[in-house]
Amino acid sequence: MSNTNTSQGRKVQPKSSAAEGLRELFVDELKDIVYAERALLKALPKMANNATESKLKMAIEDHIAVTEGQVQRLEQIFEILGESSRGKKCDAMEGLIKEGESILEETEPGPVRDAGIISASQKIEHYEIASYGTLSAFANTLGETEIVELLEATLAEEKEADSLLTESAYNSINWEAAEEDQQ
Ligand SMILES: [Fe+2]
Ligand SMILES: [Fe+2]
Image 1 (tube, rainbow, N blue to C red):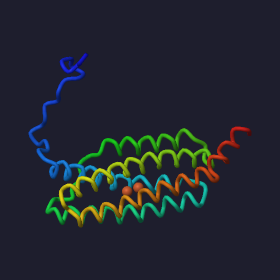
Image 2: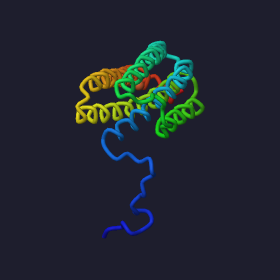
Image 3: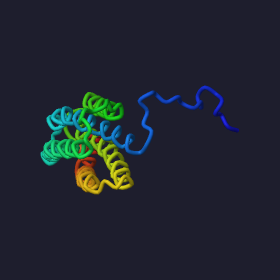
């Protein structure tokens, strides 16, 4: 049975500023991800400072530099499109960052906190991977080949960051964190 007539399933009335076509939706989502990257730039130093294992610390510090480059790439994209690079609040990234901060409070420093930092960071990377994948597909449909290349470069970096995190989790940190259970 359809529930489209109940209040929960009702059709949403669009705002007056609602996107009418793919190009507008594309620009809106670019504003979301540029906000997300800038928010992340502010949050990453705290993650790096709270990590214990030097490889993990370095990986996060590296990702700060990489993220700065990603923001620049996005600014370049806005320039190509002739749009302002002002971000639009990204609730998802705000939530993911908040979760990362509460993991710090909920873990003892050392391998257990490191495992928590990896968990929070991978959720963030996956949000970024999904965002850039979609944006690249949109740009492709819109025939914006130069922009596709820029987005794909960032997408590759996010995937690389994600697999580095997976590697450190599987190779050492999770095992060390599990050993803490026995103490
Ligand atoms: Fe990023
Ligand atoms: Fe990232």
